[in-house]
Image 1 (tube, rainbow, N blue to C red):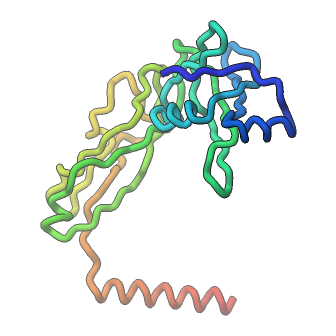
Image 2: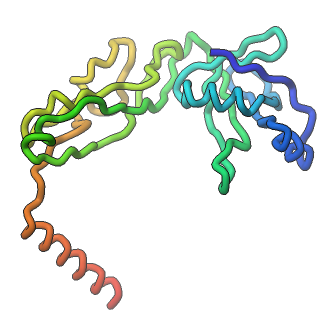
Image 3: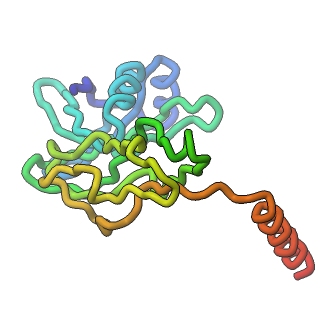
Length: 203
């Protein structure tokens, strides 16, 4: 996945004019490379960022050079949510990285559909270590395997490749089916919350 860039020569107030023209200012830094100020076509960046996220290698093309990077950080406009700046972290393909990989929950749980269970997701992403080209873009969690209330899916059941090292306990539950609370339990929980609110106000 390539992303074309050019060396940026405008700074300060000049950056605002670039943004109005559909250009995204960016900084390139990292392993074995001097910091560079870059300009990217906003529409091209948004397309690549949507596909790659922050854990998939992208090749930034500057002139006749290709630099493998991770999109490390993207600043968004507080009103429009449009990207206004991006940090690109250059990596070495022979050095392992520690990144967070998002989880994608797929399928439908029979325990939820037929037994009235409640699906509780314990995490949305997990920390891993791997060579840049081995980092998974996403890790899928098939919840159709959850057929009964009380069942869970653990990290070590997700079929994570052997060349990807988990940085958290592999026995941790990713998702669990819990029994739906009764009306009495919900009322008791609400009452407890009310008591806590009164206590805080009094304090």
